[in-house]
Length: 444
Image (spheres, rainbow, N blue to C red):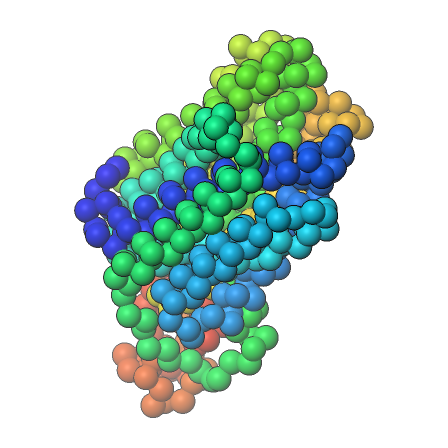
């Protein structure tokens, strides 16, 4: 698991990720307290709106930043976004109006929407070996899960000695440390781009999403992302309703239930590198979706807290079976220079799934009851499973024979091609890019 940390550049970037995540976790706690100070009993609606704005920023801004920054030095963009995030979060202690919270959160999360996909797309360039990269993905998954467990504890300890506003300062410092670590990492030089034609601004902004949706395995990934969002939203939104309202237990028990979900995710992340050495991504990720559906069905029958914990643990495991290998699919589906666009598309489209499932779960839980909501979300997960089964080919070949009909004979991309009727034919690892705008109709 720790093998990727032998790579000095990756070690710096991983440390930057962990520190930024811990800082963001502190802000999550402080933001809840700030909302209560400003809105009192309406703090829940303030936080709900702020989280919705966060998702809107993720869905809309990620492809835009990726497209506009595609030709800029990657390290400079990452450092700049970290510094801007540090500035925005430092404004939060001075907020006096609820509208100011909404504006700052949207702007700060817009920077995160640009930073995170580009950061994720940089890792496979630093660690080209797939086996080691898989371990790096597992470490990244563990970092997210540990943040959910550790940040609230750190915030609780800090609040014993200082005002919650100081937590915002700590987050700002975390972003600055993250920026410094990115500066010290050595990133590979960008590949020279060979494009069929100059791209317009719209083509650059929309390229990642268009390429993503044109790739069969990634269409399957999107269906699986819907499954993860459906089960995850059920856990995040309704854990407190089930534990406090249904079982009449305490806030600590809510935390234990969430920890069970995170613990399941961490266990799967630990074991996946070995599993993926023996099995392809497709059956592992489809199995994750199947277990998600079974876990939700089991959740509908839970009548005691001690039975809820293993169900939540199972849901965490199965979600990680889908989430952790995602980077492998994106790496396999994109050329090096286009990876930020593909990662931005995944970031945007997967969060669009969460933007749908969050309010849906809340509405259904309030209107038809928790048990019926379990069944409804299990049906959506099953739909995602079936769509992935259909959209993601069983024989998922990477090297495909294809014919170019619109490139000139002297184009650099055709140096190993031979003339056939109607164009030039060759075979190589196939990805959607400016020279390959569509997926081949037949695989040879």
